[in-house]
Image (cartoon, rainbow, N blue to C red; front, side, top):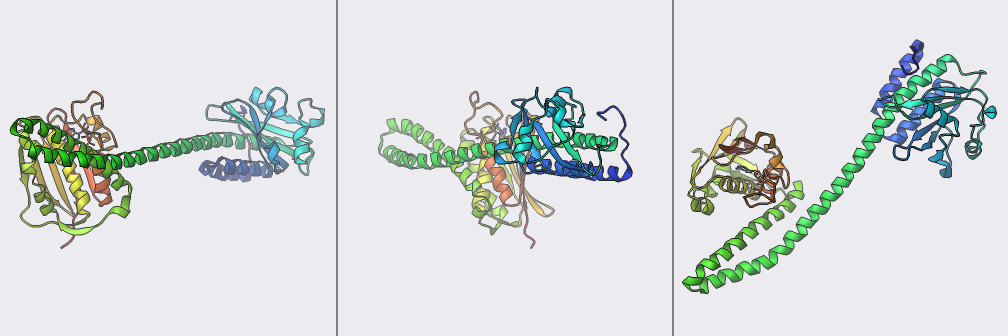
Length: 414
Ligand code: ADP
């Protein structure tokens, strides 16, 4: 205990204190917390009123924060001098004080009494401390009712209450700060999402014009120009996939509303990916094997979304696997689910990053130094789309040897 002695609360007060501790610990809103503390402080010590002064963590000023008497708006949170007030003296000494007759105390501040239309006679004040025993404020019980003095038991009760309250106040402040930071992050995230939505939308139109004209010019161009036209076309197609990723993000952000479920054969969807003839894989002389069950596996999914997911996984496997490597795709029923597996012999993923790769814009290599193209959106989109379809996605990998990605989707009972 902070007072250096063991408080000798009677059973009734002890039981009450345990209950109060439970309430204060579960209250995370500072205002509510403070009003509970003053109410309990006044009741438990049979005081006419109770007040709380809190130290502003930034300015280190002591503020008159809460009182069982209504505080007029112009008095709310007014700073109280640390050097010339009773509450200030309690904070500075970091120990309790009992002022039996405030009228004799030069530190007594009459303004507050005048403002809240109250007459203070005696003050029993104790510091409220945080977990490190540093003062965060002062809890005061004012004017003992029906007795000339506050008792030793009142003093002990108030001390225990202030200790519990100090920790609870600090916790509530931290939670408020966290909530604020979290809201700011959510706002920033929304700005970013809106920017991506607008940018991708705006980029799409001029790109279609470029693609259209380049395809036309390529057909018209003689053989000597065809190669150059092909590289322009290749670059424009690449740009289109990047923009498509950005557009898919918006599709994901629409959430549940965008899901259009239909009953489809999952085996058929994978067959139609035509992974074996993927142009990039062919160009990199990679071998792609596909192992499918002989019987259909019905699922209730948004087909377009799941095609985006499988397409992203295949693109990654091809991209992160060197020339001549191999990729294995398999579909297998697994109890109530169907599993899609795609295994490659590529660069692999370090173990400590295996979960982070599913976050938006996350790339194992930093974007500025990396040797692979992309924006770090494919897997984040895949994860959100899979989850919108009640599925799961995860990866396993041995760095340097290859990776394996899994998608599990619920099967429809036949
Ligand atoms: P990107 O557009 O960068 O490919 P993704 O979200 O699809 O974005 O992937 C995020 C990161 O995860 C990639 O940048 C890469 O570092 C890692 N990654 C994804 N798939 C594979 C894979 N098959 N093999 C190795 N690393 C992978």
